[in-house]
Length: 390
Image (cartoon, rainbow, N blue to C red; front, side, top):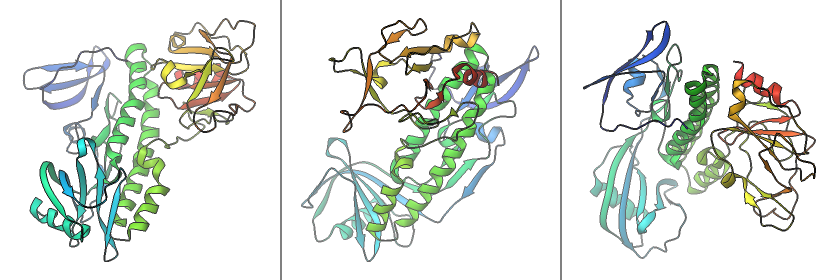
């Protein structure tokens, strides 16, 4: 989206906001250079230099729990399966086995006294939990210990919103569920299009919605991770039930955003719900073709207006119009001059692909660049004026 070069192996030593000819910029100091930029993203991990330099508080808890993570190749007579396995001994489920690529196994292990241990001690604990089955450890690729912390930055921004936090620099939590990677990637996807609007077209105000949405999400993720990590001292059944109940947050696929904000407006239109991830659908150019998947067809980076019934919304000549594209899925014979693509119909993806796509009474759906439904209704221009008029 930003079309900028990448330079590796340059450690940032300091960062601060500055003013150049009366405009706000960021000054980043490296060992061999000083870089002046419009914006900077601090995605430099839990011990973030950026967050510390900006004196942003990192708030939360530090439970006395040490999780050992072992990526290893094993030989065992335990009946392997492609699913996550949680082992229970004496009413506690302190070990999980996650099958990985190349036949590798990942073990999460919490000792009963919450102590830190070396690899040999952890291998012995795993043997005890898998008994009476035999386990031989053949080759280890990685072993590490995670001291559990549950913290989130008080704000994701520097005072003038020129420096933005993302990933582990903004939030950390237990390793259970892989939520750190999922949440960090979602941060990046949510930030990229907003940053592109700010850098390329000067729409600085849209950045605030990044913090509004992702800070609330991080707090929810930390809450789920805290429940998961504490449930390991309970039964395996309780642990599995908690995973199933919170799968939306663990995967990140079910995270939703609050409606009635500057970037989320309107009422549900069938399967298209403002603030929810847009469901994938098949787009058909005629009644006999197999269809094209929405997620595979669209180009990321712009807002997508879908005209559900052939209505037009008269895009203005405003500068923000270049960030918007319109498709018509009504199948009406008369051309829609605003639409750059026309489709005859939509159908569902998955087990309901033989049923029509429910769209309610809305004339339009607006899909944001991050594939969340931003709006459903009839006043598309009104929605974009709120997005870009901040």
